[in-house]
Image 1: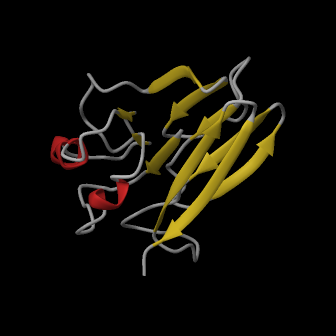
Image 2: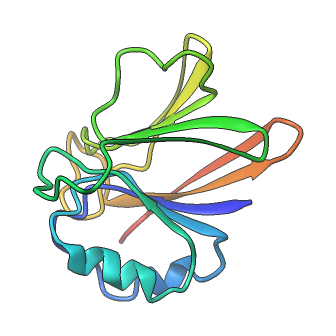
Length: 146
């Protein structure tokens, strides 16, 4: 399964970015979307879309967290990274820091695709491909915008 992962669009979507997600199986947005128009752009790709609410999102009907299983992995999506993974979770995907991350913390792997519109601390504008393969294999490829 191949997932396009992005975060912190802050009401801006770079031209042509959504079209790059066409080869994905799903799209995940990790918060600070800021406007439903961003979700509508992502929905035009025609793929399943999972998203969580960030600290800059005012839509209380959007979920703060999502927990689910996919390809044998227990996954937790949340905008602001928790200090530790919830019990039983294999992967924690978050945004908020605007800095890419691929780090093992305790029993879980924490992943952050960085920020598309406002990178921070010298990090480039970025998003990521996540590949989940049944049998416990994870692929994580950071894609930078030039």
